Length: 262
Ligand SMILES: Nc1ncnc2c1ncn2[C@@H]1O[C@H](COP(=O)(O)OP(=O)(O)OP(=O)(O)O)[C@@H](O)[C@H]1O
Ligand SMILES: [Mg+2]
Image (cartoon, rainbow, N blue to C red):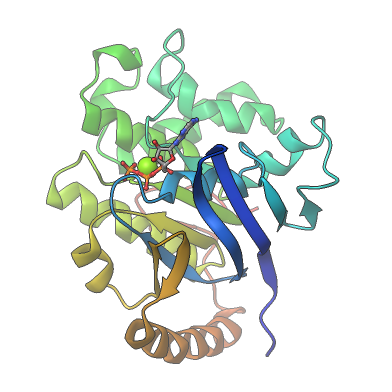
C-alpha cells in the first residue's frame, strides 16, 4: 500500500536573520499515519520546523506543502482553515488567560460548531484524562507549568486531529504524566492520527519504536535503526488497521475518555 504524503519540504531554507540559516536546502516528506520523533539540541530548530508546518513562519527559500496547501500560494485567509485540521501543542502552551481551563479546551470544539453543552462535556472528560479534573474552573495563570502543558495537550487532541504537532509536550511534566501523554498520542496514532513529537530528550525517542528525525547542521538525519524497526511496525499496524475496521469501538482514546468518533 502506498503511503500518502501529508507534508512535503521542497528545498526549504529558513533564516530569521540574513546571516544565520536555521535550515538549508531541506527536502523531506512526512507520511500520513506515521509517528515521528523530532529531536535536536536546544536552538537546533525543532520549534521552527513545526512552525513551518503550521505556516506560522514561511520558508526563506523553497516551499512547504501541508495537506495540499503550498506555502507559496496559500492566502492569509486560508491559513486558519488549514490549522483547524492540525492539533498543535505549543512549547509555551499559549492558554487564553481570560478563559477557564475547561473553556480553553472546549474552544476548538466550539469553533468547529459543536454546541456548548457537548463541548464542555467533552472538554471536562479530556481534562479528567490528563489528570486535571480539579482544575477545570481555574484560570491558566494559577496552574503550574506541567499542569498548563497537560491542558495544552488536552486542547490539541480534543478535536481528534488528523495531524498532531507536539512541541516538547512532556518537557515540564513528571515521568508518570509523560508516559501518560505518550500513551494518549499512541492511541491517537493507532486510530490514524499522524504525530510529530518534538523533544530534546533523545533517550525518550530511543525508548519508542518510531523513527527519530534528528536536526543537525541545518539538515535532518534519520536514525536508520529506528527507521527499520518502524517500517516493520507500520506494516503490522496497517494490517491490524484493516482487520479491525469492522470491530472498532466508537470510543477513541480509551474507555475513560469516552468521547465518540466522528
Ligand atoms: N522569531 C525568531 N526570530 C529570530 N530568531 C529566532 C526566532 N525564533 C527562533 N529563532 C532562532 O532560531 C534558532 C532555532 O530556534 P528554535 O526555537 O526553532 O529551536 P528549538 O530546537 O525548538 O530549541 P529548544 O529546544 O530550546 O526549544 C535559535 O537559534 C533561535 O534563537
Ligand atoms: Mg523549541
